[in-house]
Amino acid sequence: MKKVEINLGIPHDDLVSCVSCGLCLPHCPTYRVTQEESASPRGRIALMKHAESTGFIDEEFVEFMDACIQCRGCETACPAGVEFGSMMETTREALATQTSYQPWWRRLGYGILGRPTVLAFVSRVLALLQWIKVVPKKLGLPRIPVIQRPLVASGTDVWLFTGCIMDAWMRDTHRAVQRVVEATGAGVQFPNKAAACCGALHVHAGLGEDARLLAERTMTAFPGDAPILVDSAGCGAQLKEYGHLLGTELAEKFSTRVFDVHEWLAERLDELPEIQEASGRVAVQDPCHLRHVQKSHHAVYQVLGRYVEPVGLDDEGLCCGAGGAYSAFHQETASQVRDRKIESIRRAGAPEVASANPGCLLHLRAAGVEVRHPLEIIDSIMTKGG
Ligand code: SF4
Ligand code: SF4
Image (cartoon, rainbow, N blue to C red; front, side, top):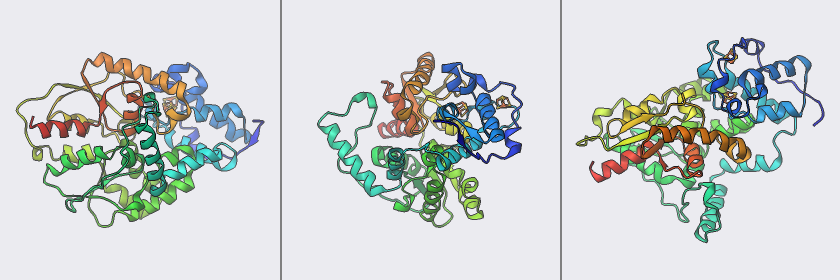
């Protein structure tokens, strides 16, 4: 790519909020594996500043922006409160609208996520390919059912957000979550197809217009005031940011109804069934969008702690490399980042691993790590009666 004219549109105050202290560098997974300044939050912000002042970008700029996992570990580490995630989203949207950053085939893939009938068809084809054993195990895909059993509502106390890929490929996780939520005495209802996809991957890809359309549509699927529980950290973070994405009062109000399911359960621990004694150690992988964005990862430990001994990892919430669609487009970096996570999991010395995000689950499973959603672990303990 030659030099291309661009207007990123990042507010000046945001750009100058970085004081270049470098405290975020050890918390950035892409800096950790490359040791390149331009692959760090500070380096990326410097590139953004340069692009804004010159009005031009080049191939190197696109490469370093695209290589960011958007884990937002840098935000947690930053003493100056730099809102890196928002700056990166604005940058990606400028790239997607003003350059050829997102090719047609990537746009097609993202487009399928918001179309449940097409996604169901693609998933059924994948399920058949799995059945005849031509899908490599290293892809880490769960066993996709050829025929999907519907989720059945049990009341109207809470909604459970079902999403796109998770509903198409991991609906049994929703069933396990439903059983745990019902164990508190609450009835669970499910949204209609208008809530087909939260739009998180579209925001990450810079497809802001698509994300806003999906967000508007998703909000119509949750009438009333009942809490909206989410069992995917990435989707939960996105639903909580609808106010920021759409900038309307309605969206702000909607976001206040959204809870990660562990957050909601942590307030109702006494309503969950008791067991005789804790069932062993479970290493907990904190998904970035639960720890760095929602900041509610502690709830997972509280809920798991009623049934097992949760063990935190020693890497201060460093990303696992999944990053939504990141691991599909940046396989080498994603796998180098994952190697560090796996070392940390090994050091935890627990026989089982829990992760509250489907993207992290699939990415870790692709490397042979036995990992389940925390509420699947609890559901199986409850089913066995402790
Ligand atoms: S979002 Fe993650 S990958 Fe991107 S710069 Fe920040 S820490 Fe690094
Ligand atoms: S983003 Fe924050 S932590 Fe990183 S260099 Fe800038 S001010 Fe320092």
